[in-house]
Figure 1 (cartoon, rainbow, N blue to C red):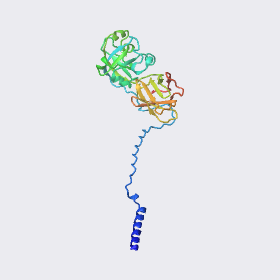
Figure 2 (cartoon, rainbow, N blue to C red):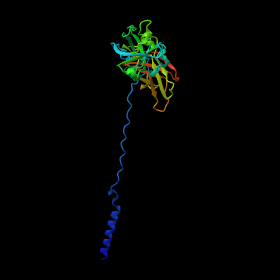
Figure 3 (cartoon, one colour):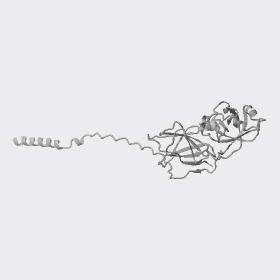
Figure 4 (spheres, one colour):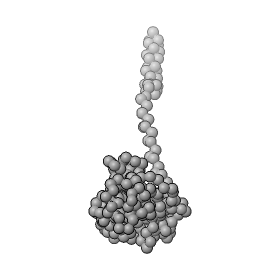
Length: 299
């Protein structure tokens, strides 16, 4: 009996010991750590062409604006009879409209001509034959302003001209009579701009600062207007698109919190796709309100 009890006790002890050393903990369901959400890959910046050192050049389409056939338009004039209309208006040219090479031969264009500012600087030949004072000979005008409503929307195209340019369509000595005619029906066609002896100018806006650059671009030969402008900072090696602010003004903003590195090179793309580069045209010591003359033009 004593042996049986001893054996029972021994068996109980062995079972207990086996329970203590058995891997009970490994059998329970462990809470698996939640996988971390996959990180979305950061969008890669669009590759930009890398350019090395080069001189000012033109490239792209070999031809500037192609002269097309004549089309019908309306014409009126504003401002002083022999004046320049206004100080640049919606293109931002300011008093330059009354000076060479614009020389007051300017017009405010209807939306189809102004093109939300992309038409600033485009040149057109205009002529009339519907009034006894019309000479029938063409005069060249530059779009420097916008004519946004009213009479300017009554036809496919309308030129609200300076008194000077309106009078240029008249027979000798009959400019005042032509200006008094009210709304004229004229003919117009796109032509290349010709600014002999004048290179492209870059006027830095008064609001520009080390982190924000804005520039007015004027006097482009050929097309006269621009479809795109790119800027290259010093030591960068890549072109970054500028944004059309309004009229003929283009802007570039530092998105890094760091000051922009001048001198700046500017790459211009005209309406027909012709490209021109003005290397280091904005110097390291640039100042707001100053105009910097390039050494180049489209022709």
